[in-house]
Structure formats: C-alpha cells, structure tokens
Image 1 (cartoon, rainbow, N blue to C red):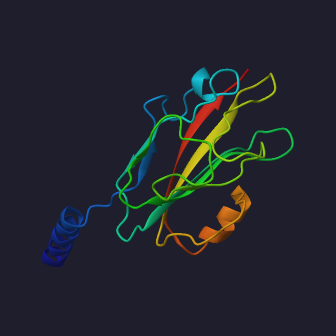
Image 2: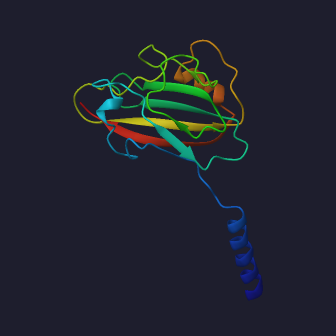
Image 3: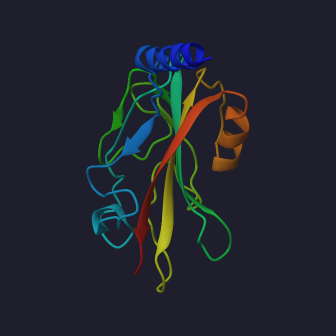
Length: 174
C-alpha cells in the first residue's frame, strides 16, 4: 500500500512539472491591482486609456476581448471600454489607444456607456471610490460581429468561446 501511495505522489509531481498550471494574468505599469488609477487615465485629466499587458495565455487562443466597467455607478454598471478581436499574438495595449471603431491591426472597439467608441475614463460623482474592472477574455475564435457593439452585445457574442478570463481592478474617486 505504501508503495502505491509513493508511486501516485511521484506521478502527480511529474505531471505538475510537465503540465504546469498557468493562469492568464493582466496588469498595468500605470497602477497595481487594487490600487488607484492615476488622473491621466480619467475624465479629470487627459482621459487616456491605460497601458495593459498580459501573459500566460491558454493554448488554443485565437483572439482576446476586453471590457472595462464600473459596477459601483449610481444607475447600474457603467461600461468604459469595449475592445475585441485583439490578435492572438498581441500581449499588450499601449497607453492612449485611438478612440475609433477599427484599428489598423484588426482590433475593433465598441460603444461605451458615454456613447462613444474606445475608452472613456473613470468619471464618478464625488464620494467614495469606485471599482473599475478591466476584464480580459482569451477566446477560441475571432468574432464576426458588426455594428455598434456594446458591452452587453460583446458578452453575448463571446459566450461559449471563452477559454480563460482574468481581471485587473483599479480604484478611482473624485
């Protein structure tokens, strides 16, 4: 019996070395997870999209999608950014992504809750800090959707195609 337990432990250890359990991760050089978002990325300043980077992408990824939203908004979740068809070999978004529907590399942006394409930074009413969730999805396909894509439409389109998801949370208050 001891031999079987020892053999099982050796096999499990070997499998963990051969097949490590990576988990996709997203981060920003502009702020830490759970930290405050600098003013440059908000409506009180330049309203730039923050730089983002990710790694440990799951096998089979064909594209990425990202939604940034604020569930603390007074009238329900406020969507700040809808961006999708990010190519599978891309591992970052630079600061200040253009606010247009189609980018040169095939990336598409949807309509945020401000009614505009691209990123719209945090702009909460004065008071307590709001939480801004930058949710990244690794998808098993490129999306073939057209028109003005909202966060809700994007979530509907990616159902059944999410290989893995991760998030970065930033805080902001005025």
